[in-house]
Amino acid sequence: MAELFNIMKISIGADKLRARVLVNPNMPVRTSEDIEATARVYYLAPAIADHLCLGDAGSRFQECMSDTELAHLLEHLSVEIMNETGLADDVTCGRTRSVPGDERLFDIELSCPDDALTVGALSSAAFMMDWAYLHADAPAPDFPGTVTALRHLVLTLRGEGEEAPVATDAPEQAVDQVEPAFEPSARIDTEGVRPRAPLPGNPPAKRVADVAPVFGGAAAEGVQAAFEPASLDPDATVRMEAISD
Image (cartoon, rainbow, N blue to C red; front, side, top):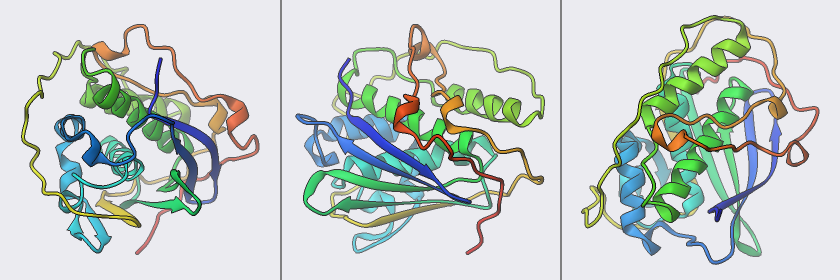
């Protein structure tokens, strides 16, 4: 199955995850190349439009969402998934940089209070964008269900029991011929920030290779996807730390 992104390498430090991401050949590089697909992502997670985004286009992501790099949109969607779980730090943030010499290669940096949370959010965001840009005829991903499933996974890995989420089928979202609620603009180097109260405690470190993408709703049926361990740093672990401004 065709995919938008190839996550080539992931490295994790004390409080940040860095991913080298390739936008695959023959795939759009900018959101303006398929504005209806970009609108599908917006309707899955409309809160991304209000993210603080520090750059030339303005202070909010909505000011550049319709003409920015797909990798930048992936960053903001990942940040929002983490934010919605309620398990991120008081400030959840990210940054996207292009790699000189290759217009399809990007470095995405995300807050990483917990490696399972951040890797799960990144992989789930990539899955959602695959649907929006390549497989819109399939059932739409269940964004709330994905957030709930990711939260349950992270708490289980932490040893903090929580009742397992009940899977529900989400109706396919009709977003053809929509008018996105954002205006075109340009953007290269970015940062998205969303506030969230920190979770107290210091959970045990988890290996990234043990974490698979988490999906919710009808779109999850029959999906078998996970990161290949060879693409990850085998010694990468993280610990829970607050990120301060």
